[in-house]
Amino acid sequence: METRRILMRSLAVAVVIVTVICTTTAEENIGNPCCTKVSTAVVTDPIIGIRFQRESLPCMKAVIFETERGESCSDPKQRWVREKVKQFLKKISY
Image (cartoon, rainbow, N blue to C red; front, side, top):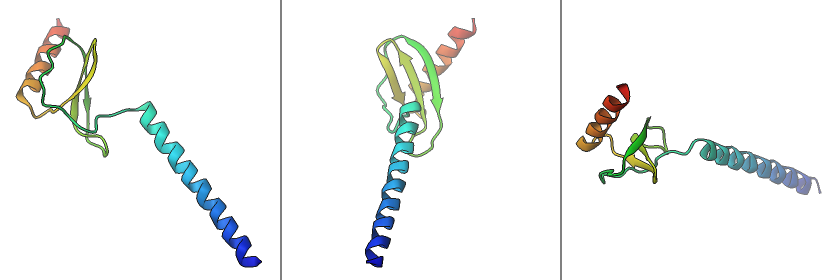
């Protein structure tokens, strides 16, 4: 009887821990989505904003181009990405 009570308490504690972990993880992903993969495809739509993302697993280092169609996670190592960033920054500094 005592063993059954200990087992039930342990199970209840485990359920609470799993629930807290799942809730915390879901809240982090909803409030702060990130790029988990990057594209090498050239962004041809007009760029209306740029964000830079640092690597912090599961997020990858990326340049996020914002366009009217949505966001594109791009590889910052690509030459065209660096050029687009320079063009955008030059455009907004005037």
